[in-house]
Length: 288
Image 1 (cartoon, one colour):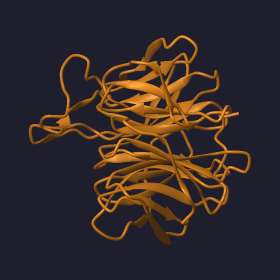
Image 2 (cartoon, one colour):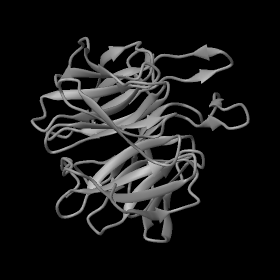
Image 3 (tube, one colour):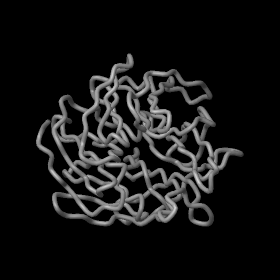
Image 4 (cartoon, one colour):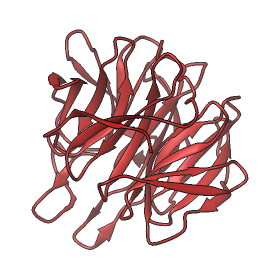
């Protein structure tokens, strides 16, 4: 295990790390409804969209795009409902902090709890919807594809159990999706049309899967809950687990000159850490 550096502490359920060219890392604070930029020992609030911001990514216009699940009722530890808790896709101007809502629905389908997102090289946005859980009720979500300018959105697969992390293969031809409560990794063809998933693997043990990142070699690194760590899958379904000292290891992002710096969110303890990974991550389409 390489050295682990603590980049930021005292975060309110950090998620969605985005590694920036200046060496900082942007995270969402899901339990505080805000977006924060982190350096070694320093934090700066970029925006306060409210709700429950989750996955984040830089888009083709240089803005930050965010999946907002609507927020958590922390007393009952369930999804918030009512005004302000609408699931949505947001665009955030990093210079001004201005928040714009792009999507709250897909045709007749109201977005429930958008969770994670990734841009393809053409500027299309793939995102998952985890679905809300409240008062013993469960809403379903799915996998969607949309345009970054708010002009079009397409349902790819709806009514899964709990779609969470999403990422693209190095050649852009495959979309990987992690299902949290099934602890399964699925694959879709990267076509903006309705289709069914292909099962890659089920994670061993009593675990749940969260958000993910892909390596340059095409391995899929998934944040893993309960037995906290990163589970790395090969495209043919082999897996290995790297533990970290937090039961809710929610996400990983790659950066640095050789793309081997791994930024990982430890959400229960409110930390963002950085360590050296054993292989380089895949450069994202618009993280120049």
